[in-house]
Amino acid sequence: MRALGPGSVSSFLKIILDVIYVGLWVWVSLLAIFTVAVLLLSFNPELITSKLHIGSSIDELISKGPLFAGALGAWALLSGGWMVIVERLRRVFSTLTAGDPFHPDNVRRLRVVGLVLAALEIGHYIFAALAKWLAPDAKIVDGSFSLSAWFPVLVVFVLAEVFREGARLRREAELTI
Image (cartoon, rainbow, N blue to C red; front, top):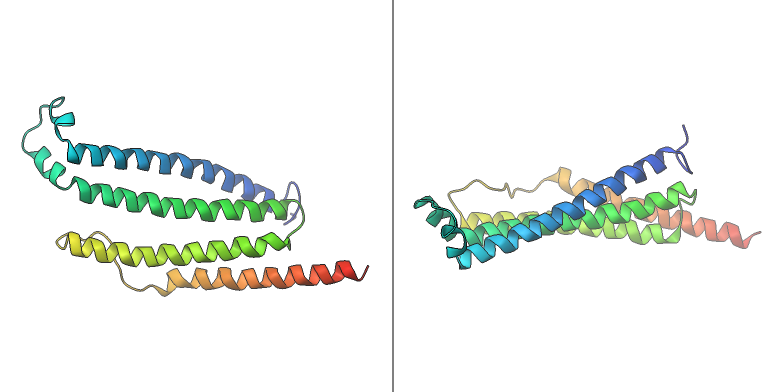
């Protein structure tokens, strides 16, 4: 089984990343629509209460509407971060499928993946702190430090440097011909 080129494992993984990318687009679009709907309903609850005959339970939902919209917005940002990661990995796997693993652009792509992974982890801590501050009675997110979350960030940055060195060696080899 080949790792590079057409019909290889890398081309199979690229197809999987393409499917995940489309799914993330649909997911983020739905989250954006739901976030706007929740915001509209929290500022104008008559839109839903006039159509539905619901008792006082809707009042609690309406009062927490901005908090719920913020959580949906944070979820959309998280999903957007994953979209950036998947999109960059799709491009890396495109070069692997083409048989060109040490393409100079792969270094930048992997660095962006590392930065987005770090930003997502920092965002996780911020979201956990805000959730604890805004809803202290709810156990929404664990904001504790996790070495297993930061390890992939370091691995991706190291891989970016390996790819940078591979691209440099490739350029040197091209000059010696």
